[in-house]
Amino acid sequence: MDSHRAPLPILVLTGPTGSGKSAWAEDLAEQAPIEIVSVDSAQVYRGLDIGTAKPTPAVRARIPHHLIDVCDPAESYSAGRFVREALASIRQIHGRGRVPLLVGGTMLYLRALIHGLAPLPPASPALRRILDARAAREGWPALHAELARLDPEAAARIAVNDAQRIQRTLEVCRLTGERCSELQRRGTRPLAGMPVWAWALVPRARADLHRRIAERFHAMMAAGWLDEVKALYARGDLSAAHASMRAVGYRQLWAHLAGECTLADALERGIAATRQLAKRQLTWMRAETWVEGLDPATQALSWNHDVRRRLAELEL
Image 1 (cartoon, rainbow, N blue to C red):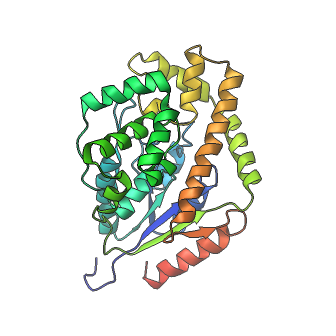
Image 2: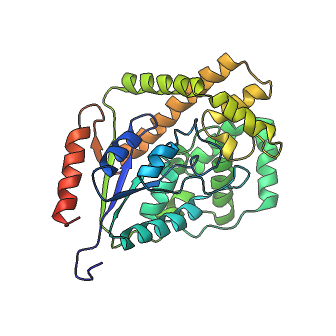
């Protein structure tokens, strides 16, 4: 790369689940020197294909994708690992004279990459046992309510039944005596000095997004999603406690296979959980001033043309 050329940009396209991010990204990558970096906490897992809307092998053969299928469902994948691997992918893509397009809706990962991760204390097994015992007695929503008193900003970004994140955030608050959200703001910015062009798909009509979510959920079921989860269930080394199996949709289908609910109930709960996830994602996006909001129903072509024009001005 020419050392006198302006640094290549990093493109970010985020949005709530079901808003059409992948289709926008693939259309652009077919016409510009783009490689896609997934920002999706479920697509990192091998074997979670249908329910994560993972790009097909045919798409991945045409368009380079990164951070997909990088770990086994029995492993844990953290925001810290994502930042390290995303930075490595970005450097490699830039080294080829191409532009990375980060695509996905896992806000914890995106926030860590943009704003940085603060050095947080290591896990405390003793404190975690205490929190687990309390959750068994009172339920995770009760611990979420406690977190809302200790760190309202962090609690607002965490679902009331997200046991893993509630536990970790309470643990940090207890161990440090400080709000986790304040500690995270002190982290170094991994992308400092790099130009970032960022957009979020923000549907104007919530009803349209809800309809798309339900339609996509049923289409995934028709494509064999339940069989996919059955294969994971049959492995024998996975449980509902694994992060991979807590992914939206997988969690509800796993409960059905465990005999905890009917398939109809699992579908209803899965769609409702997906809508709740989309609501949290939209809340986060509207608070991030560095992201430009776009209407997915009307602005796809203009966005595509604008990005290609800006890249052409960089002689890409």
